Length: 367
Length: 261
Image (tube, rainbow over all chains, first blue to last red; front, side, top):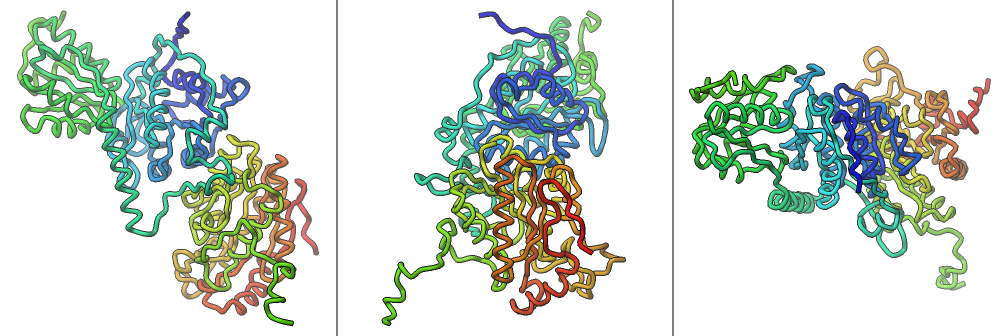
């Protein structure tokens, strides 16, 4: 089998992967730095090939509610946006979670707060991993660090969303969205048939037939006793996801004296820093959470057993560091290195943070 | 004649529609929602569309529409029903997709979703209940509340200098190229109920035929919110509501209907 290898942006890879996964509908609104997702889909015209619906909505509020409506009918539907737009979507995301609907939301993060900047950031970590909208809920949050993972996580996100009937998010950043890399695109799959949806999603709005009661997709329940039961059901799902779906990647963990925890584009920069540190005689390891929720608490705890310190490197003021501290129970010193406002640091700055925070000296830093 | 001879299926001339459930409605006495629900259930039954219909319920008193009409339903966030319906119809083009919305849902918080769905000419039917008040939350001012009308948030009457003007959104929607049929109806007399029913039926037929967006506004009463008896509500509606919101077609077959002099 010949692999379909292309050179493209992360945002473009999302669009291509969506068509090839057999996504039924994409609904979005332009915002930098992710507009290429919608642009690429409009150029691909998948309605002519797979039958996929692509629609530019009048706002992110409308986009996410189109996703909500489509998901209620059992279709594989998605949207993408960037930070300010994802803030607008929080109402709809909360409704998706409460109505136990599968869907995929892509956030190609830019700097905030407010209108902020169009440059890369990871400052929506709290919003993505702790719920974001109102109520007790979680999203499955996947953090790609390459264009390949942008493509791969479309399928993974939908698979997990349908498996657990919960919305999933790809939490990318402006670097991963905009950079061009080699990517192997997945094979073209067929969209599910109406019959497959009826069988696989018995809860979906497919038209009330004589053999079943009407399906109602709603997040409303005014009987508090039932509403508490509903919440308990959501929480059981989240426990199951926490038990089964933690994903991370470790680099040089076996002999690491120090540990970096970083995700997304920051993990790529930190991997370079790790390689340079090792050339300079300092054994640093890197743990890259792939699922930000569920978070790899145990893996970080285990990886840091012999570590003298952990550096959490993020493009924000210190968000994931709170989860890393929870993971290690104050047994290991945990320090933060971050840049904000769209600044992307280089590996030397990461190593500089080791010197500043832990007093680590590098023999041959110029190498 | 014995009573049991009279109460006999053969003599029955009127029945609850098969698609209207036996659930006790939560609507107040005098409320227009129950009648409109009944009409919709009748039409879906008559058109044989039970297996082919998806309803989108609003936030407001009609949030529980899904408890009464026996088709598949999704309950939208406040004002977002037309966005949901747009996607549902595009993803399921063979289905009849309709929204059921009140004035706050459609003409305040959901104005953007309503106008843009209609402007795209989505093949959906929008059933819009305009009773000029927020019923569910306890009788606050709606975008369609009349000038001078007392509500919980305009206790001395709506003042245009403070609250702006009543919004005649159906007239606005009729101006959009995407709407095929826009009409304003009522359900307070037998004659108006019959007319409203044929209007909603036409809207459903238009949606199925892919003719663009159809909007049926039903000017209705909210006796609890208006703090009037049902009978007084109907009279007040005729005297005041119909002046600002006159009954009749605003647009049909894509053509705006000129105002009669």
